[in-house]
Image (cartoon, rainbow, N blue to C red; front, side, top):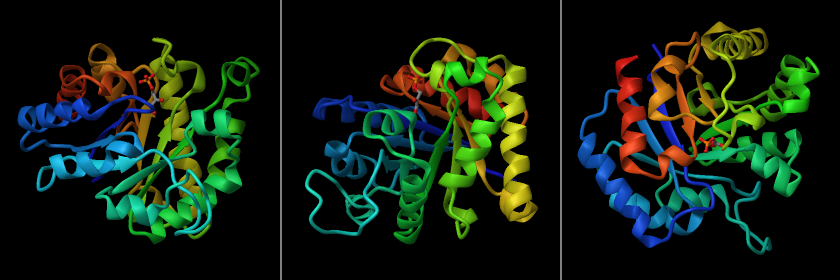
Amino acid sequence: MRRKLAAGNWKMNGLAAQIEVLNDLTSRHPTPAVDVMICPPATLVGAAAAATAGKPLMIGGQDCHTAGSGAHTGDISAAMLADAGAGAVILGHSERREDHGEDDALVAAKTTTVQGAGLIAVVCVGETLAQREGGETLDVIKAQLTGSIPADAAADTLVVAYEPVWAIGTGKIPTLTEIAEVHDFIRAELTGRFGADFADKIRLLYGGSVKPTNAEEIFAVSNVDGALVGGASLKAEDFSGIITALEAS
Ligand SMILES: O=C(CO)COP(=O)(O)O
């Protein structure tokens, strides 16, 4: 049975005082029935890990370089994130693909690096509005999955997040039928490529405008094992509501 996962992506938000949200979350959820993760900006990873040491809240990074170290000004490595206390890294988020031109091959290389460093790779896929309206959604998801997850990926440290680009930060979400269609498709694709034993281990997260008010219905959808939450992970009260909804699902 897959353990459900409530993951928060703080994106480029949060100064030192934002760490208080983690203290609030761990006091509201001292023994959560699901896995809980927050991915703060890189500047806060060390402080976040220190604040949550020994508590059931994993800290993750939002991106990393493919190399372990070297002459790459401004970048950080998976080993550095691990050293700072991270247990996971988000890879291939649509904002990285858009802002930094990241393609599937780069995301696959990063996945290999992250898994090699002993961290969980949270690989993101998702279609744009034009692709959905053009009926290309499943083709796009298939290509991103094939290209972004390397052939030698490890099941134990892989999470896949489906984030329709047009649902991120917009307050719009796909219909529950549309979410089910994509999540079922991702499970089937992973099964076809890696086999059922592998595919059954992978948590599939939905991301895009998840709020405490819509979490319950989203978590009832087939093959949704949790959420990757942006805006609503910045406030303890909001993210706590999502954790509680996932625990009840
Ligand atoms: O991009 C997301 C998480 O990675 C989703 O962001 P929002 O929850 O703000 O829509």
